[in-house]
Length: 338
Image 1 (cartoon, rainbow, N blue to C red):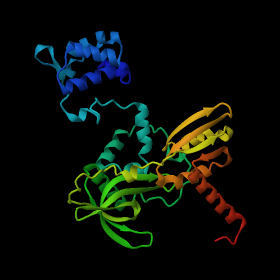
Image 2 (image 1 turned 90 degrees about the vertical axis):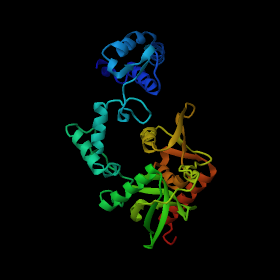
Image 3 (image 1 turned 90 degrees about the horizontal axis):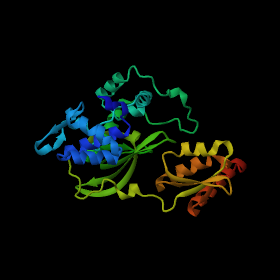
Image 4 (image 1 turned 60 degrees about the vertical axis):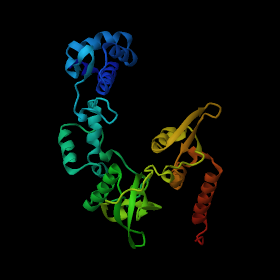
């Protein structure tokens, strides 16, 4: 089908919108023409609609009575999560996926047979990059044991519970070595690039009642299984405590020196931020939004940039910066400091 030659062009967007609407309810030729004008161009309807109704693309539609057309796509796997026709992967996307295959974290999100099928599908594809192309100079070396069978099992059990929205029973070992068992409603999985660890954020329940929120290191979960107990009525899986953002963003000024802007944009890519150029000072002002639970990690990352950035606020965050710098100074210049 020749229109796949422009799968990311306006023709493809118009056709998949027509198929989406025709999948909901039969549509007329006039409605198809309107969609083409909206998603492509006014003249595109002259090329698209005839091919869909009586030309080479007609297998995509089924004509009903009174010149109404419905989508011929019956199988849900032909549609993406948003209801649109799945877009074929480009060579670049396949190369990117091939590059992710050696990453043990990538493997955590797949069943063994699905991972093997993907690996086979991409067997002849060249990876976009290699693992050895990157050197992590600011990451702790004691990351999670991603390749351990028990870790994979626990991770996928938690992931399944989050998808199915059901509780899990788990045995957790604290940093002091003590173990406890609890029933948890898993809300979020959180990854720390600095620690190279996953954290599980959830709310415990007991006898059908909500208890306390927890942030657990996934590697400390010793055993995990799905629970058949019901979820309390009205429970919000986007638990507000875990979605909270700081009242004010952390504001920094970025200079031109040592490629600081590009380094900052790359380093803080996982944060929501706004950056504007200030011509008067020839610097960039950047506002970084983060969860209060991540403030300490953000503070350490900012300090690692040294004099090429200046932290401007808010005042509470500046106080933490000054205190940390004061402690670091004491460690270097006052050996007796505890």
